[in-house]
Structures are given as structure tokens and as C-alpha cells.
Image (cartoon, rainbow, N blue to C red):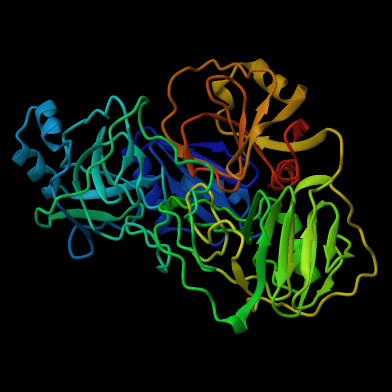
Length: 547
């Protein structure tokens, strides 16, 4: 096998590009088998493998050497270690697909059931695996118009792949059956059943009718899940029912002795956030977590918490919270009027928050997101090691709503520090100057595109949320117009669609994508962008390389 082409992917990641899916799978197996300390993620895709590192443990230069010289992976054979997925071959597209392929339904079912499949990579949604097999000879076209809703557990075919939908989503694969296997369980220690590299067999499981998908609609391929939280039930108790798109119901309300804060009014969007879920991108799970990670870390340090403790991320203000026990709190990030029981509280200064007192965050004068931390941190549903709310995938606690009650955790790391100095101020005004590291697909663009990227002033549009921030400005001209095979993404990636205006992926952004990435915003740039409201102007500069 020829050596992979190593491409930069921001300051802390590399993209290894192979000549084929088989070579990418082999490289992924070799890297997984020889993984050194300091590797955060190894994410396979159609022809690439993304390696993300913690540069404090493993330098990017050392990671490059490891990728190029990784030893062969131990040979494995199919057998007792295979994941067995029960399936009912009763999908609405089964007969039409068999006819289109020129085989009988029985022959198609037999070939699918007898094949030994391997999870090549994941994407689209948490737990959605793209399975391939040397025993599978068919190239199956997607539906000409995808369905608006494919039921959870549906097993489909597209191209040379088969896959099963972990939850109900739009989709354009041809559905041949249904499984009741727990494809994604957010409460499990290992939430995803079908992880990259796993061997999979399908076994017939009776002939009960599967739920019917909804009719198709215009478009092609998979449609992305909505970027906004799902609608709430009309009526609910304090511990409300989960939105329909969630893979598991919320737990019952916590005992009163553990509660700490009641939500009086959440404002436009308030969510529970910590430092997120790094290390799970290969399972289709985004990092998520606080958009302004620096503000969250500071809030936790100011009340003596571990920096990973969960806080409330409040978007644009208008949030009201009532303490149900005596607390110590702090507000960081965006700048505005903050009152506790009617008395002013300064940002970045810990305050006593007595039981029964209301904390008000008025609409922010500067910045877009503030963090409310309490000593001990907030408790909440843990998914893949994090309490963060992922609004795109619907993971973690639901966005906060009036009547919600939060518990306090035990994430203290020391005493509340004395403040001899107060180095914090409001988010800066004016044009934001942000650092960009190189992206893997700059060669898809005309040479002048990089000059345009770094020489122009860009504007944050109204299409900006926890998933991504679309920028307005001059078009970045592409010289390659073909379709890029799906590959892994990271927060900060500047994806450029055919229209030429970039979108910066944020913490809840998709873990794979098909638009070329011209550059990647640094972590510090993402923190600054978290405070940028629509209309804010942005300029880019070259980041110093990380060795």
C-alpha cells in the first residue's frame, strides 16, 4: 500500500488521505492498534483518517511520523466476536430494490444476510455506521427524493454500503428491513453499538411489520437534522418528557435535597454545558460543550470547581433563575446587568446566592453568551462522559425550560480563590481579529482565494448558532468542482460550499462533511466567535504553527 498523503487540519489535527476506502480502512486499523498516548480521536471516513492530538502530550510532528510508520494491525477473522444485528426483511423498498438490481427478493435478502460486514466509518448521526463487505456485489442508488422521516431501526442500502438508522431522521437510503437492536444508547458506557472496525452480521428476526416511512420529498441523499432543539410537549411536569427525537427519556425529577436552582425563565436559549465529549467523533458524536470554553473554565476556577464542571450557557440574556438552597455563584463571558435578589452583582466576581433569591441576567450589552456557574457544578444526564447539551444531535439534557429544576454536583477542586487582581473585562468591540490554521483542502481553491480569505472583512450573519456560523463576504473561488467524499470535521473548520461563502463549524457541528475545508479557526478564535452577534465584523490572520 502506498503511503498516505498527510494534510494539515488546523493546529492539532492531521488528515491522512488514502487512495481508496479499503486503504483508508487498513490505515485506520493500523492506527487503532498502535495508538500512542496523546491521541484524542482517530476518525475514519470514505478515503481519509483524521487524527486529532493533545499537543501537550503528543506533538503534531510526532503524530505525522507515527501515521506514516504505523505497523500492520493484527489479523482478525469473523467469528464469535461479531456484532449480530437481528433484522426483519420487510422494508418498503425491498421489492423495488431487488427488481432494480435484477435479482429476486429472496436472493437479495440472502446476499445481505450471509455477508460479513465491517463498519468502515460513522457519520450523519450518532451511531449511524457505514458498513461494507467484500461479499456484497451491488451498487445501490439512493432514492431520487429522500424521505422526510425514516423510522429508527430502519436498515437501508446506498451505494456499496448498508446501514441502520439509530433514530428517526430524514434520509435517502433504500429501506429493506428493520431492527430492534439498541444502535445508540446514550445511557450506556459505550453508547454506540456499531463502531468503526467492528464486524457485523445480520440475522433474520421474524416477520413483524416495521413502521412505514413518510413519503419522500425533493432533494438528494441524507438531509441534515434540524439545527434547532425539538419542539416541547404542550404540558409537562417539572421533570418534563424528552422531545421525540431523543434516544432516551429524561430521568424523573431529582430528590428535593439535591436540587439547587429552578428555572424561572430561560431566555431565548439556555443549556447545560461543560467541556464536552472529545474522543467520540469516530462514533458520530460531536465534541459539543461550551462555545466559549475560556469563559467556562474561568467561571469554574472562580468558584473552586474542577474546570470540567457543568454550568449554564445563557444566550443573549433574559434568563431568570431561583436558588432552592444557599449557593455560591458567578457569571462570566458576556457582559450585562446581573442582579441577585435585586442587588447588582459584578461579572467575574463570586457572589452569595441565598435560597429563594432570583438571579437575573438582563439582555447582554456586550457579547452573546454568559456562563452561570455554582460551586460544585450543576448535575444532569451524562452521555459519553459529559453533561453537555448537543442541540444538533439531541444528546444530553434538553435545553432549559421554565419549571426545570437542576441539581448540584460535587465537582469542587479546592477553595474559592481570593482575587488580588481582576483582569477581566467585557468582550471587545469593533472588528474581531481571529487566527486561522491551515485546512486540508486549500488546493481545491484558486490561488487568490487565500488572499481573499485573509484580506477581506467578513460579517457574521443571522445564520449563527451552536452548530455553525455562516459568514458573508466575497466568494472564495474553487478550481475543483467535483464532490468531496465525506470526511471528518473538527470544531473551527471553515467549510466552503459551492456558493463560496464559508461556514465555521462550532461545538455541535456535524462530525463529517462533504464541503472542502480551506482553513480551521483556533480554539481562541472559537471562544471569541462565541461572543459575536449577527452583524459583527471579522478579519482573519495566520496562526502560528504548533509543533
